[in-house]
Image (cartoon, rainbow, N blue to C red; front, side, top):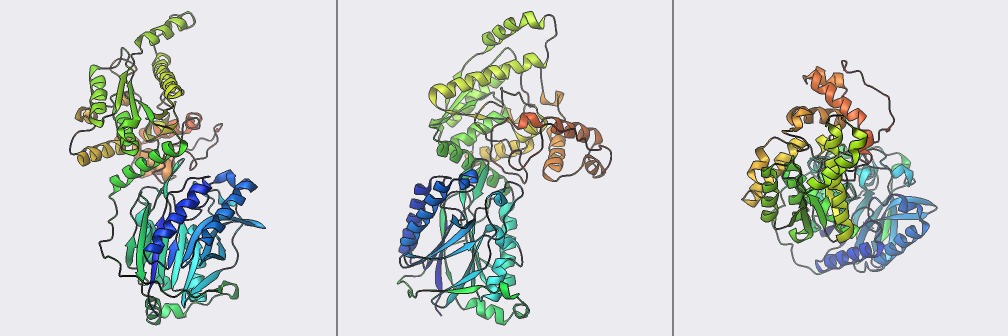
Length: 580
């Protein structure tokens, strides 16, 4: 039989904007139709946006989503469309809707509901039951939803072996973390070669609260070879022509395909789609498959996308950032300018007696190089007023962390005042190393609406900053910022290392404890310094109350503080420090 042209439409929906999301899908359908596409595939939950969380408990929201899905189905004339939508008929399921030639052809419900990390799908959805494959003019394909393809013997295997599917379509909303795209490709290539079928994976793109979706949709051949790849972190339509007979030839040469013994219930039912014939079209223009971004650029693009979408989708006209002249606020400002345009970023320096001239100069130089607005609001007199008001209560007690923390709290108050007056969202500038060990001031530097580098360890902050300067071909972030010792400048000659281990020692311990789940003793047995391990893990354990009150920020590691991290605030568990 002839080949079939496929389109993977990786879109950026907005949670709750059902009308806007439907319009995006309809525009994608029209673009696919113009390209001579026979099967157009869209991401998981594209109608509702993902994750819709407790919106799924609102019957009117579900009704709106299903009405939107029926509208899309009605506009599927001349082709087949597969897209994601919550679906309520008796049970609520996470559904892949199959539309064909202007009608609703079928519903495939997600079977494996993730309930780990950032996922809560068991809270909302019933488990999918049964399985189906679709026969389009003799070309049989199966449909599954996200998690279902991660299991070797899951629904796609049943569709391929029990149902004879030549194409396994998976719609997904797979959140990004560093390095996930490459591991996901390895899994999908394995599914394709093990099942002797094409695998087409359509992933969502965009930012939603703490999550970033990277797009990176792919098509693999039945031999596991990559045929097409969507770009990362941008909307894209991936076109691919499939040789419809290739899976049959592949399976005839692969004896493993004759050893599969399905249970009766694992043999999918066949749904016959009305014949349409092939559209008149020319060959696809050939070109190189987009290369994967390198490790540091991948993280940077995720931060830019997550920040831009959070601000725009929340309806803010711009952002305000406290610029200290340090590395964290500098990187945050650069990301914000890239995400929103420099005209939508305001930087405010708020020096006191402890702020160095170098820091103020570096903050101003950064703002000028980025082209963002820059203002100086000196807070020394405000600081003195606070100290004067408190002096009758403080008496002759010495200057300590109390007076240090008054300064960031003044700055937080001023930034929030600017937010109220100009409608700008305040971006906080704390990194994961600081957030993890509580090296921050509640209602001070934690005050704001979005924490851009909340999941970025300090050592990675430097790598991202150097990468961005290299991309610019100039020092957007002044060179002095990259070499001076990190300091909060809240007392004379202060350095972060006065209170914390050096970051190249701190960050590996933090990653091992938070992301890898190693015990303190386990880290020591692997050669980490016992004193550093003890110090860092104790700080992590006793600062949950601070983290719980911090704003959301984009997840870029395998385990971020937020939806990924759910420890009780009141908690007396103390791990043994000297044992693995």
